[in-house]
Amino acid sequence: MRIRKAVIPAAGLGTRFLPATKASPKEMLPVVDKPVIQYVMEEAVAAGIEAVLIITGRGKEAIENHFDVSFELEQVLKERGKEAELAIVRDIASMVEVSYTRQREALGLGHAIMCARNWAGGEPFAVFLGDDIVRSATPCIRQMMDVFEQKHATVLGVMDVPREDTRKYGIVAGSPAGERLLAVSDIVEKPKPEDAPSNTAVIGRYILTPAIFEELEKTGRDASGEIQLTNAIRSLLARERVFAYRFAGRRYDTGDRLGFLQATVETALTRPDLKEPFAAYLRRIVGEMG
Ligand code: UTP
Image (cartoon, rainbow, N blue to C red; front, side, top):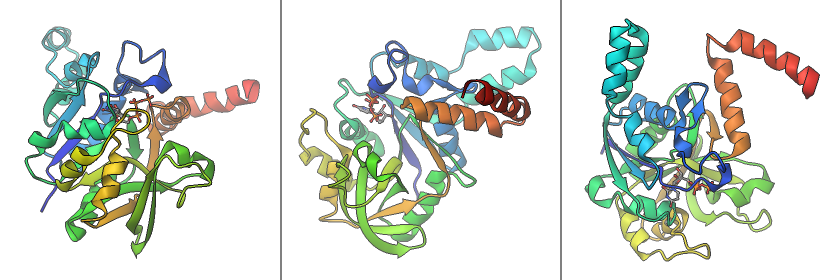
């Protein structure tokens, strides 16, 4: 079976990025000149995803407006003959079929995914966290879709992180099952470095089978009051195989201040229009202020 659908949870409160996220969604923060969630959407489209469900919440209306037609703006650009800008604005609204649903309370990533149950309609689906950008030659989710098409099982996008960072991620244990591939035997949410079963961390890309919904229903809230996707995947392990794939590419957690800055600097350095002057500026300023 092919993966056609993707869910982008974007209802989180973004407490790590206050005050910017007080009244603006973190998914709309610009990396150079594009909101984070547009990079995510472009990855989905490049991988061949046909329909996207964005999980939103209060204060996230800017996301819906961004992927909608902007009639007034298009009119003004047309009148002024700004063809290039017009194309940019129009392309965003016609990227892919987008639907929205609201998570009424930010009760965690697992709870956000549960909001997609009816929409998923019993199909396996991809999940992109709305604040995780991955830069790669082949879209990260495409790499994972290729694994899914062979294994017909849940696939988690993973990367190795420094030991001291395990408390920021879901961490997997597993045995080698092919190139870049692990057969997962355990998964733990945000373990302390001394308790972590490895330093292989789950990032914001998943391919999930519909069985996850039954496991999420049974997953209680954790100590922080949230329903964790990691805990549902852990119970899924008792009934289905789960794989972890070490994707090729660079991942940025833009919901974190340092991650956001890294995404900004590295993206600017890949842009033909900015690369040279920006690199020259960085060299000079690091010498002066660094
Ligand atoms: P994060 O772990 O980054 O949490 O969520 P957060 O609440 O958004 O941000 P911080 O940690 O307070 O700064 C990972 C992804 O899951 C979504 C977020 O929008 C983000 O894309 N999410 C999280 C939801 O959709 N709902 C939730 O209840 C929690």
